[in-house]
Length: 111
Length: 113
Image 1: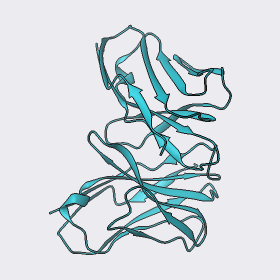
Image 2: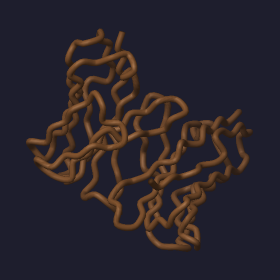
Image 3: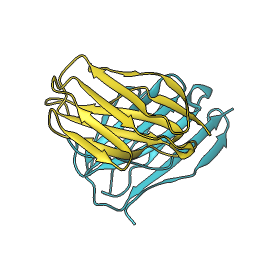
Image 4: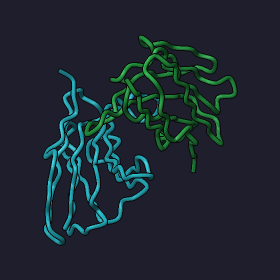
């Protein structure tokens, strides 16, 4: 089946730094979603991408749908302590209705 | 407020004692799904439902049952829980399957002793 490789697995950064994470797929996706999960809570949708090359922002977050349709990137600018959590990518491809999830990036922000 | 509601949030039980985790959504979504989250394994789909009375297995369905008798409800049933089913469970829904945003509940932490 389809697989997503999400990297890095974890990041430790200082408050104020920018963050980048990405997901790559072995097959073409036509939708990319990025989620954040706070400790003890369910994932919350941050950004949805539907077209190759699309660049979408949500506050300090920016995500891009890769031109090859096999990858997506999430950037967080000027990180703050409340950015701490697990960030998941998810993709949907072709005729398969199923949403495939990456294994997540654990972000820690040191004040 | 649009939401996916799971109950209970926390549950401790013993091996073999049947339990049900409820899930309800108020967004008139057709698609609903159950996931379990385990360290290092990410989110794995247990069962999903495309619409009322239409359910199918996900990646890890063994030991679980579901039903979809009404559009808003999608309970997860563990007929005879075992310790390897100790996990964090999430219910999720979307307007339809496919290229749609998936919305998650707050989770149910289950411990089977």
